[in-house]
Length: 144
Image (cartoon, rainbow, N blue to C red; front, side):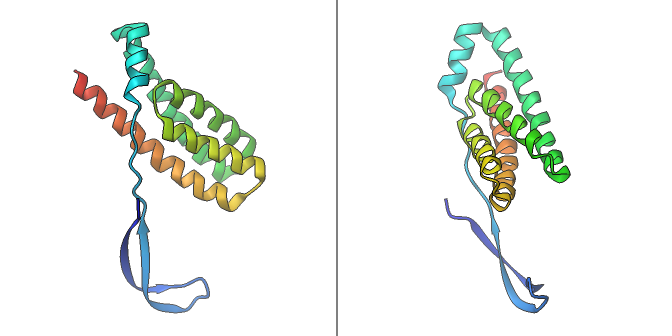
């Protein structure tokens, strides 16, 4: 999906020069929760147990996403990698395939030592994580 663009007037570029127009890209990537994964979880565990698992997974994902941001600010790359690995496992369990893939990409950036890509993928992980949590929350509201 192509990013939406907006223009700002009177911005300063990287050289300290004032430029007339700067294009700001708004990132918009759709997320989807794999309904088959969730349905399988509910069939296997029953409604009450599956709902408990999903709620705990959502809470844990929210905590891990916040930790990843904090670890990044603190330069704790080993901890980012561990948290990303946990995000992959949790996200796969409840059908958040895109979130799992982006968390895997974050691990790869750390393994390659690519700090520029790490910053970009981290931003994507946070966006994807927030949208995925909202999506699954909305799905739960529909089933009530």
